[in-house]
Length: 348
Image (tube, rainbow, N blue to C red; front, side, top):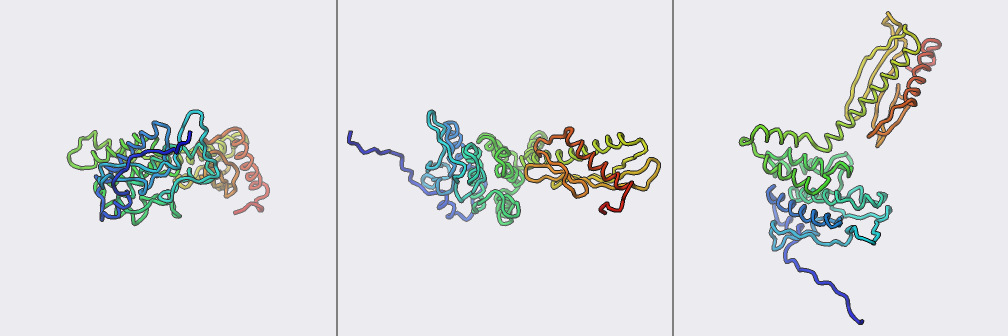
């Protein structure tokens, strides 16, 4: 058959979101949310069909006849489709996405399954909301100083002006949507929509009930950033408890005349530190001081005793078994023996 294949699509008469936004001095929170919620509805339909767009940016969104109430998403050229009998896989060395917001999971080096995650689209949708309110591209999730898009100085002022009393709720939404780790972002479009709806309903003061106030406060604190921080502090604190347990157990194996005293305990987001000293029972003069630090490094949790790294484990699921007990006890016994028998070689 001699035929020329072609496809017929609907023509949308309107403006790209970029050209529309550039014509606006300011965009109100109500209008920005209207556009964002429609985009989330479109993405919900796409994701239900196994399609991840992966190239959401102002140039790929059309407002029909310039109306914020009529949103269209275009250009599915680099989208991922979960289709039967078709093995569509982006190689780990390939980079997809766009420069409007570069996502780590879409960069070269990320494995294929990470490049087809619907949560990437949801993060892009948050980038659109951010762009509408500020006029800025989010560019990257974390800048050189570790700040998320909504934490950067120029953006904060514009977000404050646009959101007013809803600012804290809006920032909490961005905290979750712009998380660097995919697993910490909104899991579905419905989850992000629900947070936005609550922000719009609960963001006004004066007419809320006690239950509504509690719901608002929960939203402010219940963010992926805060949950991640709580887990990190729990892990840092937990390592220090494990160290103390190992030290006490080691002392019991040596002699009842050996006494250990805790002299400091501090845990923050960047690390934990505990100090202990050994003395002879009934005496206050220390035989040996030690300082133990639990330090997060990437995905690992490190234990340093007096500045020496002696143990490492997974930060998310730390493991403390016989090997951990042995490492701590061997280090302590060696230095305790040096302190009692030959203290000169000991470092300060």
